[in-house]
Image 1 (cartoon, rainbow, N blue to C red):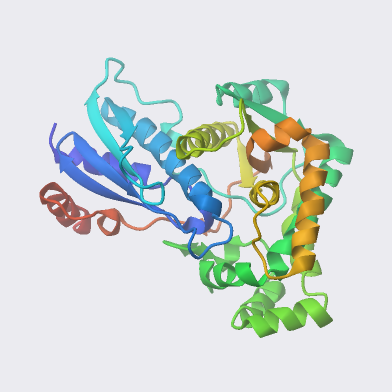
Image 2: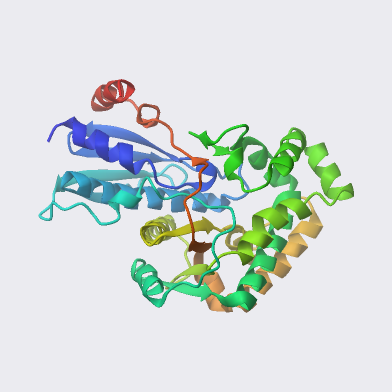
Length: 369
């Protein structure tokens, strides 16, 4: 095997999902069959990345995607995290070996198709066969389904209530300000404004407001600024879907390996959904802020937001059950419908490579593509 299979594998693996398209990884090729994935997280500046867990879930999704991508070259990817590396900068050692089964993984064709759908979906119920396929894709995890009009309406209202915290929290403002690429259908390293899920007028208002926190606060205080985005981003889409779901682990996640494994399972679920003609949107805010509350950790300078988060954490436990809520690693909604016409892309491979002798050669080849 020469270096080109590694190039093709990484070019496909980089399509793994990550929160706000942060892509918290870089690749370092060490030889024709060895590489390191160098992880990082955004906990220092992103309130949504509690202890780096959101980034660790994304890294797990990358590892799963890489394992599937390797099968397109007739290879198996053996993986191990270097225990000497810091949780904030984990290093994953990857070794590629020949695989007895040379057929590509059935989900390999879904890697580039999978995307976030933030807009309304079909509310046609999930078929039992599709629910079985989705549940079977996440061995070791359980899926709780919230279906039917009453349950979807309840979850839509719950997500809209969580969104009020998200949209009024000063600690979240820098993230919201920086993640959107304006006047864009696609974006290599952010979220294009056309994929956000609001109408053009609201998009223009958001662009104006996000230039300064004082503008956001003015809209929220005097003009009910959260109602329109919550309606378009949470309430209507939360009702217009087939189901909401919670991905539940056997035990409460605590270590980096727990969250990496959760990311691998979430990616299998997402790719399986794509293969079934379903689109999906993660709904992670309730999981993240409930964990802040359980751990007694302050995450905002606004007491009213903290108090509302505490009430929502209790509400989540009532909806899922206390044990299930503590074991939940991800939430989302899904439904039948077309893939979005606007979406986040990924950085080109040459920008994701960290220098080594082999990586320099690979970067030159990627640059010429």
